[in-house]
Structure formats: C-alpha cells, structure tokens
Image 1 (cartoon, rainbow, N blue to C red):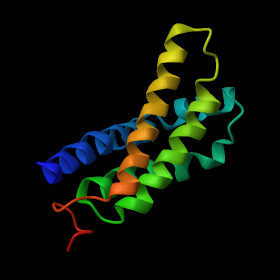
Image 2 (cartoon, rainbow, N blue to C red):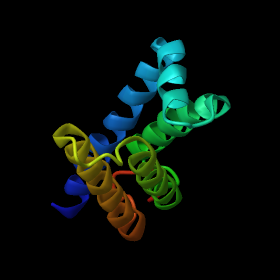
Image 3 (tube, helix red, strand yellow):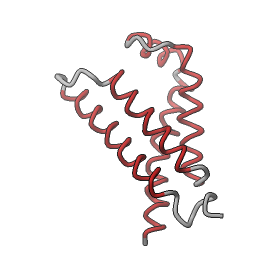
Image 4 (spheres, rainbow, N blue to C red):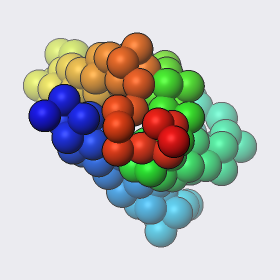
Length: 122
C-alpha cells in the first residue's frame, strides 16, 4: 500500500507543476507580465518553466525524486511568498496556504523517497 500511495502522491504533485508549466508556455507574455507586476525578474521565466515541467516529469517517473522534491518545495515557498503574500484577500490566503501545503508534501516526499514504483528504486 505504501508504494502505491507514493506513486499516486507523486502523480498528484507532478500534475500541478506540469500543468502550470504548460500554462506558462501557452501564455508566455501574460505570465511575464504577471511576474513583472510582482517585481519578479521576467528573465527567470524560462528557468521556471524548465523547473516546473522538468521537475513534474521527474516526479512522475520517479527519478531523482528526493532532490527534485526538495527543489520544487523550496520553489513553492518562494513563489508563495512573492505572489501570494497579500493574505488580507481571501483568495490570496488560500493560494498561499495551498503553496505551503504543496511544499510540505514535497518535503515529505524528499525525505521518504519515491517508493518501489520509480526509476530511483531500480
């Protein structure tokens, strides 16, 4: 059961990042504008896309999961602080908490590893 739970958890965490990266690719200019509005350097957008897409795929296939989950967890906290710091707005507070929850799940995954159904296990 544990290894199946790791696989399902990796899939659920991975899909968030893959879908987010795809959204950034398909709405590149809009995403760059959003980043600029929050003072985030837009030259980082390609790196963000690579981190989200690459990290999501690595989680999904279960390769280098401990390091990938750690990197995505740190990224999630940074993104939460930059983009969802206005907790006076209800939606922003929920987005902040969800980003922190993602980070928590990623840190647990970083500590536990990918499980049996992964490339790391082979």
